[in-house]
Amino acid sequence: MRIIVAITGASGAIYGITLLEQLRLLHIETHFIYSPWGVKTIALETGLTLDQATTLSSYCYPASDLTAPVASGSFLHQGMVVAPCSMKTLAAIACGLADNLITRAADVTIKERRPLILMVRETPLSAIHLENMLKLARLGVTILPPVPAFYHRPQTIQHLVDQTVGRALDLLGITHNLGVRWGEKNH
Ligand SMILES: Cc1cc2nc3c(=O)[nH]c(=O)nc-3n(C[C@H](O)[C@H](O)[C@H](O)COP(=O)(O)O)c2cc1C
Image 1 (cartoon, rainbow, N blue to C red):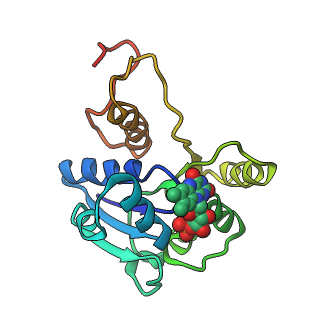
Image 2: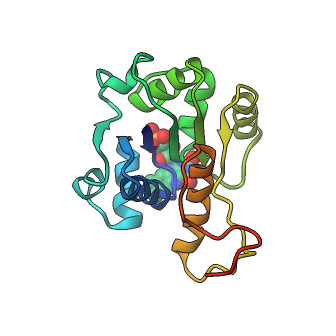
């Protein structure tokens, strides 16, 4: 199994990092794409260097590298997750503006009808943001904002993050032990 993971410059780099960590634990091949602002938020919010983040993945590419295999529809994979997804990257994907490797891989994922999950992060949301999300949702893209639930009484930030990352793994059909499901015991 192969999954593409992209980290853009929205707040919440920990979501993409946690996703890479989990996929690594599950021995799933990952293709990690990072934007320049994604690298900045990884450093600001997690303290990880780019080298430390990329070692979590099987393969990694800067968003500027449009020659990477993931830029082509001939590259077979089982899904792409943008976590977190900035409003800028959301807008580019919604317009088919494939000007970097993240937006190109997303464009290709849509045209090849493979799962695409966008962990969009901004607040409040403008009508522009909402229209872009609606347009993509109607095309079958999953809009998965990292909105926490509290019914499992999370004790740490990582518990909150795990729950959203677990939902992304569920959507990709990947079995995992992250987070607590409704009706199961609390942390
Ligand atoms: C610390 C920091 C936090 C940011 N948080 C957000 C955010 O939550 N949502 C968002 O849409 N943009 C956010 N931005 C702005 C984006 O980084 C900016 O729009 C950038 O052009 C996104 O480019 P990218 O999608 O190619 O990474 C943030 C920027 C910085 C420096």
